Length: 310
Image 1 (cartoon, rainbow, N blue to C red):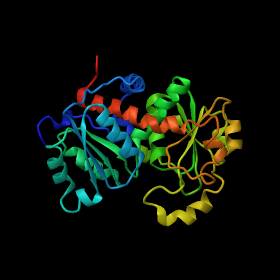
Image 2: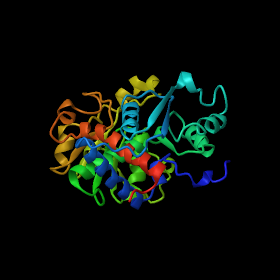
Image 3: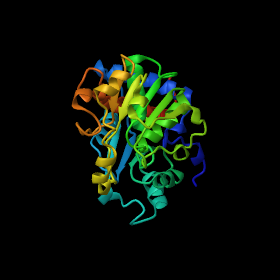
């Protein structure tokens, strides 16, 4: 390990930052977004380079990081599976040692969390999790900022997760633990959330419901994801049957708070995990949520590279 490497701050899962660091990041996101909307040039990352390594393809992750880095004055190197061979052509540790000598920041979107952890352990620069099978911290960062933007503090509120106990659910669980809200979870049998994967010891922040309608009751935010995440396509037919009752519909939204928001990390399948009337309805903030990936990640990159501003 390079001397001083342990001082580098990585963002590999939501619990890598503390509540007060999130308060700072949400404030910076607001400032950076306002500047963007006002066409104010803001380029604190001039001469900085972000390497983006994609073993899982993505529209939103690529556009949000790439556009965001360019807007901040930096540059981007884009590597796909065919270019990088993480852990195949050479050990992940060697790839990390080489790539991190040439860039200032690395974003990785891959399968196993252990891959990104091995890379970060041997990197001279900060590493950001753009998604793994276990976690999706940048998405939840954007989701919570979106909630704050529309409704104020999320502390003490209820978030309902309806669907698969996947990387999004794990990350929402970590967020509830750190930021002081309650997560209501409803998943089909066999697709439950695992608090041990999320590493959450304070299980009082989560309540599990067999019936998704009960999970949505009184919620301030209702959120879901596709039933079949990337890498699980072989299970698609089986999942369609198992998840049939877990489509977020108007009835579920009607038992939530009257001003409840609906979120979805996209891409969405109308008629499967969510009714078209919900995702395209007045309570949906999915387009703000998608845009906010870019603004929240700009704040995150600024923080990891420059520390606190002002």
